Image (cartoon, rainbow over all chains, first blue to last red; front, side, top):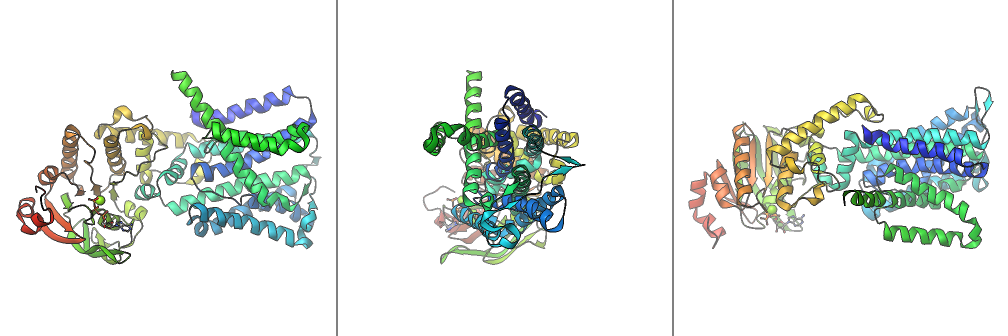
Length: 311
Length: 253
Ligand SMILES: Nc1ncnc2c1ncn2[C@@H]1O[C@H](COP(=O)(O)OP(=O)(O)OP(=O)(O)O)[C@@H](O)[C@H]1O
Ligand SMILES: [Mg+2]
């Protein structure tokens, strides 16, 4: 029972704490961005950390969620929230469709195939300019809920925080369930998992679909929050950032995914004091963290604390 | 009806006939041993019987049904399980969790129910944990249930694989060198366990180099050499077979 609620509770405390500790709409806006990317990273971590399958094209699913939320209201007058739901379903369906053939691959082949999937989505978004505005991007209709126009840093902070908490709770529930155990079994030994009765291809695809749905939701939120989308959201760099969040924060750790998202999203904003050196500093931090905390920040620190506690 | 039957099973690896035209059947319960020198093809045969490899030639039958080429998870659902010579442990899990994975087919797998912290799922988990604990007791690993599998000794891991296979309540169990890495006491306990399981109606196929164990446990011994069956019969008859003695040149059979 504890396993399912501990991480969401920690996140809740942090979210409430940050809100009352800071008095800057800039920081609240950065935090909302952290929550959105944290959500995507939590989903990707189920695929990468739990199931052990890499995806280097995951921003493609982010792009599908974001552009569905942008394009459908503009073209058909659909409510942005419904448009987002369509985008999430589309992301899940695409993952379901390509999951089986792609996830038969392993290691580098899988990395390249997923990379290709991401590039494909980004190219479609860039090329269908009549629909998407092409490389320049497009405006997103403002979100209105029951006549209330959602705006302001406070509101976006709480909306994105709420979705993040829900995403964390679902992820923790999956991990503590037989499904989560089956995913980890596939990660550790596919042959032993099969012999135990686990349909390995099915569970890999399941993890892929779950992670795509998380990315789709994050993409939709991103579009609504920014009020503007560009093809970069689906781009290669964004995919690499997502996987970096997962590895840096800690494979298989829900909290780690959020920590990773915080570092990659917030740090560049806070490091602007270093101006042109900001990316160098970020790169340096990434290298040092991986060398010192090999299992990622959260799992490594937990292991240290655990050892200290027992000693 | 036989539990497991191989009919002219064979496979090649790059022109090498690793297993060639192997036929044998096992009784519905009891111990059938498959022995043979290193590289004889015993593990390869197991891989074909358990669906890990698709046989290049021949058929495999499970309780009379043709299951040739069926993937391992389907064969598991039909009641076949196995252990591995080269350990296949879930090393990022505890010993207990390893056994719980073995119970996969006994669990409800409606993914939607696993998306939220439902009390029902929690109760099922508790039951699964208890079943796994009991199985660990049977192989003498109750004390290390909550230790990470990566911290266990080799002999313990061999028994952990057996517990993981048994928790699924298989009808046919393939054991690939279960006594490897076990000391005399552990081997004795293992023999007792296998004898009990066979008595309870399980069909066990045993690959083992410990001849004393094979001879004392088996109802039937099949001898492989260079991928072919060179003898098949009761333990005493096989032991006296000149072809077997030649294959094991210098080794006491
Ligand atoms: N995947 C593979 N690819 C190529 N050759 C293989 C493969 N698996 C087994 N072989 C070869 O097939 C032959 C039989 O090997 P196998 O492992 O089945 O023997 P074994 O009887 O289990 O031996 P041991 O007693 O040492 O475990 C060997 O020559 C081995 O090198
Ligand atoms: Mg072998």
